[in-house]
Image (cartoon, rainbow, N blue to C red; front, side, top):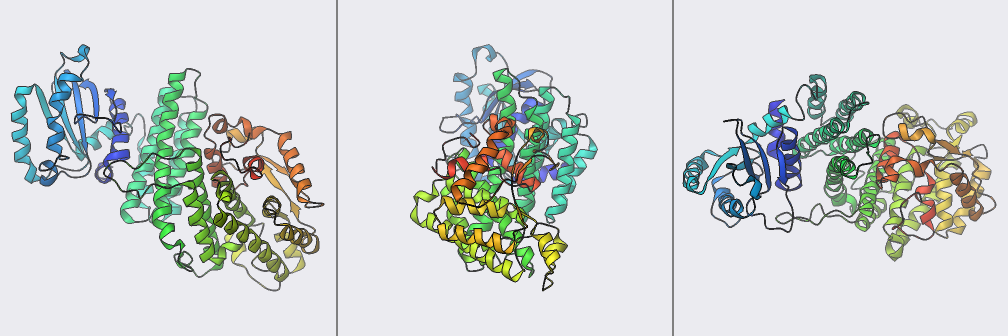
Amino acid sequence: MMALLREYLASLRERDELDAIFPDLLAEVGYRVLTRPQRGTTQKGVDIAAVGIDEGDGRQKVFLFSLKRGDLSRQEWDGTPQAVRSSLNQMMTYRRNRIPPRLSRLPVVGCLVVGGQMQETVLDDWNAFIRDAEPFGIEFVCWNGDDLARLLSKGYLKEEVMPQTMRREIQKAVAMADFPDVSARHFGKLCRSLVADHTDSDIKKRITAIRQVALAASIVHAWCRDIGNLEAAWRTSERAVLCAWELARTALPAKPRQRERVLTAVNRAIVLHRQVAAEYVLDRIAPNAGIQHGLTMQVHSAEYADINLALFTALGRIAMTGLWMCHSPGPNPHEGETERTALTALECVAIALRMIGNNPILLLPCTDRQATDIALFMQLCVYSGAFAHESLGEGVRGWLASMTERLGFTFARRTLFPRVGSSYENLVDRQMPMSDEEFKTQTGASTLIPLLAIWLHVLALGNEYRFLEALVESRIPHCTLQLWIPSEDSENKIYGDDAYHGLAVSDVDLKPDGDRLIARVSRACRHDPSLHSLSAVTAGLWPIVLHGIRHQGLPVPPPFWLGQASNEDASEQPGT
């Protein structure tokens, strides 16, 4: 485990990664954190200030931490205004002017923290610097990756807090990062163990558990980034968000300060997932989205179902990435980094439309469950204001029109249509001709058709709506058209693995027109307002509910998008 932690710490970036976990790590092992890293301020060489006990002599001291990612080389040590030595020199000023008077009598330790190791070529200069600083009353020390790994082992990962069985699941999730299904399965075991062990825990223990799951997901992400495969990172970071909220939702106290601490811990998991999501879209999807069949060829399979499932999954992930941007735009790229992780909701829509235009397999899903990915993308189009941009709006309308046309063709041929069953064996079975009995079984219900019909009506695609209405009447009159909304028991299940909850809205008829259809669906949704009472919605973190829906393969509830579909206003909270 120590070797794994050293590798992880050495790979962390200085901003938003190392400086994000380090203050919490200090607090976990007994330090009192005075200041945390900030942007746009003069820090005088100090990223973090804290008060704690020096293990060397047992005395209480003020620690001034300066963070450096990776290994420390001679060039990074000295020679430029941004060099490490220049930052450490500024600690003299910090000591005189910024340490509170009540702490001025305590000894001061300047601590250089490097995620990796200090290279041998720097050691002589470092030792000379320590001697030169003695007259200024600051003792300088260096903590390297080994020291940080020991801190992690003493803090979040100590035996009393995270037993060996849980730590093994982290190791297995990392070891199987090249096999995302296996990696996600082990990470899921870790999440279930954390939730089960903290059912009756106090707030402090729950906050520690939330930080643990975010740390575990961060370790998997760092490993996936090194091997160039973000699939496992996406799955684990998404699961970490759900696990964090499951731990937090019943512990949100009435006291504002305690509530803020809980939400801050959850936000760490959210920030990590948004970072993974941006990397996924920009590194995996965007470069090939504009190439004809570019993403289709990225799927290492010739099987239609494999390609279809993979690309609609990618569409849903792009939509979730954009919806988080609509919820709260991410911070601007910090100084010294590129804008590679800067992404807007409209850019997500544009990338998705390029992907659809160059990969015709996205014109129709192969299972009804993929209606979730379509609903999320349409929700993103509304919340991002995409329909105010003519090219984007026409692109979406053209996609839905083509989907309606393909739906009619596949029903007529009884092949490659969206099936009710989602088992892999069922999807790859393309025996023709399909018997009447089998066809009725595979088209017995649909959430895609009412979703498609509502959007055809909202976007004034009248001919396509009438075509779809006639298609249902002539080809699949036996099909139960339905949608899904949460129920009273959804709050206790939607953030985990149990998908057996919620209510079906089955009073869905395309006749006589789209206005009546929308009115019936709206009336049914108002009958059970459980969506409004979900803890993530009341806390203003509604995208977490959408993560739970995607994770469980459930349809997106109409209240998330039905109210905004006609006025295209993304500023309102979903579900209101």
